[in-house]
Length: 187
Image 1 (cartoon, rainbow, N blue to C red):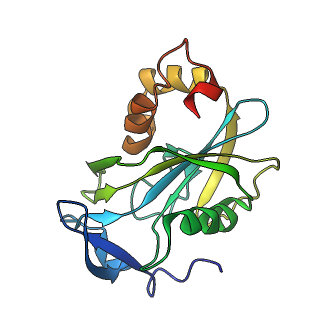
Image 2: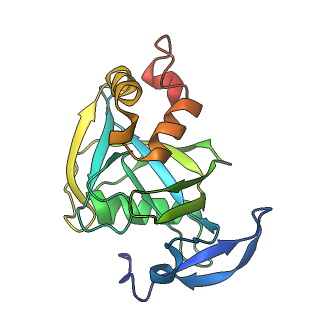
């Protein structure tokens, strides 16, 4: 099932301990005082060991036009996170995932973009493999590139401001900056 319109889509609100405390319309959640809510991130790899980085659509509410990991999203109320990951992969990138694995199951962050909008999420991080090329949904993604993880690490170190803050934090925790690690070791 494709994601619904943002005006009618709901996200899961979380207490400070990470427990579910309610739901709210997605359109009402991201502001200057964003409530903690459930999300996910996914880093997609191809058979060459390259990771897919994407540039967020220019009309995104938060971090428009910024390069980030392959894709992110929010599970709907009562939707298993794994199902949400597959749903968003298809909707945003036209990709069918295989070998989906949790790599940072307890990742959590809070970040403020240049406009003052806050992201405040418990955001489990996954990796997955794909066999196909992405077909971008322009309302979600304006560009995508396959990159070697070591080249991504160099770019993240040199210009962290050019990337989403969650990608920079996730890359650090996934040890992407460790030149001795292979892409398979990251996964």
